[in-house]
Amino acid sequence: MRRIGIYPGTFDPVTRGHEDIIRRAGALCDRLYVAVAQGHHKQSLFSLEDRLDLMRTVCADLHGNGEVIPVAFDGLLVDACRQYRASLIIRGIRSVADYEYEHQLSGMNRHLLPGVETVFLITTDRYSFVSSSLIRETARLGGDVGELVHPYVKNFLTVKICKDC
Ligand code: COA
Image (cartoon, rainbow, N blue to C red; front, side, top):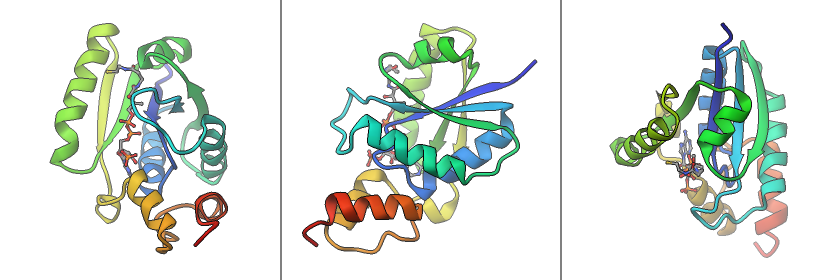
């Protein structure tokens, strides 16, 4: 049986921390959908099209064991799971602060779609402090985020939000 996973997130923008999770999750699944959420639960800075474009470029550079396919989704994550026949939801955990939220998310998803399992990967230490909002803020204020995002993402940030830096 093929193991199909889905790694959802807002990815506003995708960071090296996300890449780390994608690479490791890709090795656990025969196929991994990286699902970029429209993100009604929070206001994203970048459009869905931009976030998906960044994700496509980043994933094109990843050489995992399985297939990694970036997609966009709107609405419930469990509906995307049904659509892509994913039985595993992948989430990264950076610290205990992430745990409470992830606990609720996985419970609700299992309630809505019994049988779906959430697999948590602990983020690699060197990226445990990284978040998309910190990347945006640091870039906006002229800080160097070059080690924390893919070069394509760095260029995008420079063009989009550092215009006045
Ligand atoms: N490396 C770097 N940053 C990481 C990270 C990692 N490994 N893991 C998480 N983060 C950061 C993200 O950058 C983001 O930072 P920000 O808040 O500063 O922007 C933050 O952690 C959380 O982001 P993300 O993982 O994208 O989760 P989210 O809360 O934005 O999105 C969804 C969660 C999209 C999966 C969830 O809201 C969802 O499923 N929505 C669909 C609707 C639905 O089904 N709702 C009911 C589900 S219970």
